[in-house]
Amino acid sequence: MRIRSWDIGPHETISSIGPNFFTVPLGFTQRGEARFRTDFRSHAKFSKRLYYAFRPLWWAMHAWDWCIADRWVPELSFGFSTLTAYPDADPETNTVDGPTSHQLALGSGASWATVKAGAGTNASPSSTVNGFWMASDNVSNQWRELSRVAFLFDTSKLTAGAVKSSAILSLYGHEIYDDLGSAPSLDIYTSSPASNTDLVGTDFPLFGTTSQTGSPKAWASLVINDWNNWVLNGTGIANISNTSISKFGIRDATYDVGSSTPTWSSNAFTSIDFRLADQTGTANDPKLVVTYTSLAAVTGTATESITEADIVTGSKTIIITIDGDTFIA
Image (cartoon, rainbow, N blue to C red; front, top):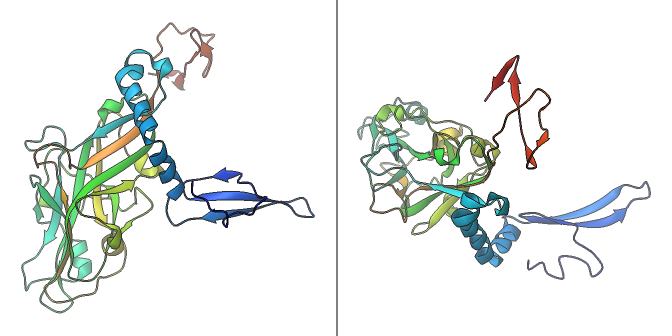
C-alpha cells in the first residue's frame, strides 16, 4: 500500500483503510472516549493500488463469473458480474449519443444566461467525434454557443433481479482546447431526449441538474488519447435502468449548471471532443460499465405459511411484496 514509516508511528496499528484514507487508533481519553487519527489523501490512491496489485486475479474472477459460474453454477459465482454497454452506431436501433446545442450566428449573440436557457437549435446524433463546447461572440460580453452531450445505454441485460454495486461512465478524449481560458468542469447528469434513437436541437434543455457522481472533473484533469472516467455515486447508480435504457449526459458543472459566468474574450471557444459510437468498432466508444450481482430465481408454490424473508427449501430467501391484499410479482 506504500504507507511509509513516517505516516504512522513505530507502535501504531492501522485499524481501517478506505479508498483514500487510513485510520490509526490513539487509545482512550480519561473519560473513556476513543481517539483516532485519519490520514486523508487527495485521490483514491489506496483502492487504486489494491486494484492494480490484484488486477490479474480480479479479471480472472470476472472471467469465471461471466463464462461459467453465472451461467451454469451460480452458487460458485464470486458475485462480480459486469455489464459493459455502448450507445448504438448509426442507424441507431435502441440508443444514441451525440451533442445538442444552442447556437447563434456570429455577431448576434446573447447573454450567458440567455444562451443557457435556450430552447436548442442543433444536434449531431451521427458524429464519429464530437463533444462539449462553448463559444463567445465578437460583441462584448455576448455568447453564441453552448453544448450538452447525451449518452444513452441499453442496460436491460441486467434484468430486474440485478443488484448494482458500482458503475463507471468512460469517454475517450480526442482533442481539447481552451481559447477562452475559462477552464470549465465537466460532470455527468441525466438526459431525457424525446427519442432514444435520435437527437434534435430541442433536446438541449432536457438534461438534469443533479450530479450523478458528486465529483465534477476539473478541466486540467481531462485527457486526450486516453479514457476519462466518471465514477457514478449512489444517485447515478440508482438512475441506471435494470430493464430498459439508461440515459446520461455531459454538462459543464461550473458555468452551465452552476451560477458563474465565464470570462469573455472576443470570438473564442473552449471545447473537448470525445470519440463517439459512430466511429468503426467499439474500442474507443463511450461506455458504461456496471458491476452487479444477480439474484437467483426461485420457483415453487407459496403457501399461506410462508412469510416475507422466510428461508425456503434450497436455502433460498423468498421476498413477498403485498400491496393491500394484492400480490406484487
